[in-house]
Length: 161
Ligand SMILES: Nc1ncnc2c1ncn2[C@@H]1O[C@H](COP(=O)(O)OP(=O)(O)O)[C@@H](O)[C@H]1O
Ligand SMILES: [Mg+2]
Image (cartoon, rainbow, N blue to C red; front, side):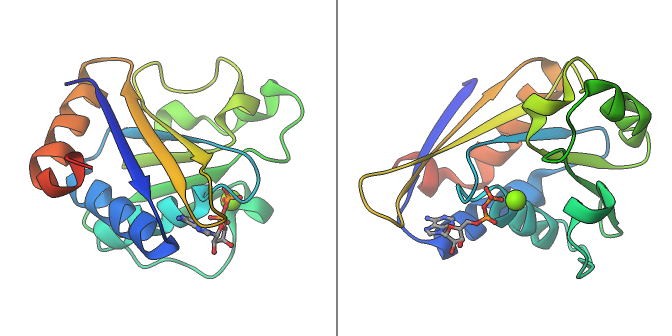
């Protein structure tokens, strides 16, 4: 399976899904979070950090571009919202973070070509009510395929939704 779809009806369900993904995460994994402002990207990133037993600092990565959370797996949480020129993403050396941990990126569309080639792409869309979200995942290589497999294995109940 290289696709996954999940309907979340509450912020808590999205957080829980992120936590399951965080549990499946290993060093070298990259997760790209696509979705408009308020979609729930940061909510998933928070869940991922919880699932990886990370200590999350209070500072939003919006102000420091990449926040580093030590945990079972070190997480590099990056928000490219303010990046206007992809060369700024080049300067962040995001590829290199994969040698030391896992990378989670909000607004990856602003990073141009300077993102890992092999990444789990998560898309969040708003549903018919203010708190429903359609979350879909797809893979772009063998590493993200393995991550998705580990995630769907450990959260079989969710995958049936
Ligand atoms: N099902 C849901 N999943 C995630 N967030 C939700 C959901 N329903 C409502 N929300 C709200 O949407 C907002 C998502 O915020 P955030 O995660 O910061 O989004 P982003 O990082 O994509 O801009 C929060 O205010 C949250 O309370
Ligand atoms: Mg955000």
